[in-house]
Length: 74
Image (cartoon, rainbow, N blue to C red; front, side):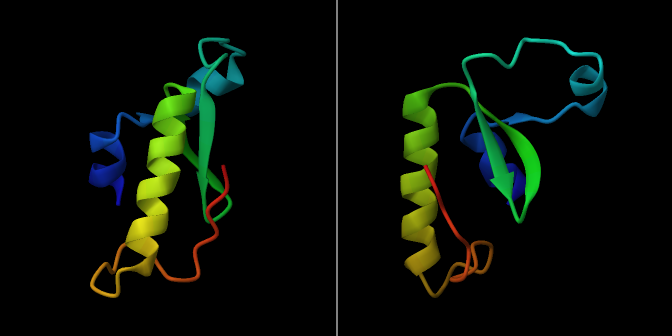
């Protein structure tokens, strides 16, 4: 899943920057999986595309990385 998210231009979380109050994440969307912040989507369009693709993968029985019970919100 991590490699797939990186292919979708998801920026990984850097805890040290979050703790220092760095504001570089303004205007981007947080991506949360299983209640954990895993990264940042660079734009509205990219976040919408990511949500759409996750919804499609969720329905594919052959996809083991996206469980059918995953809640996808946008």
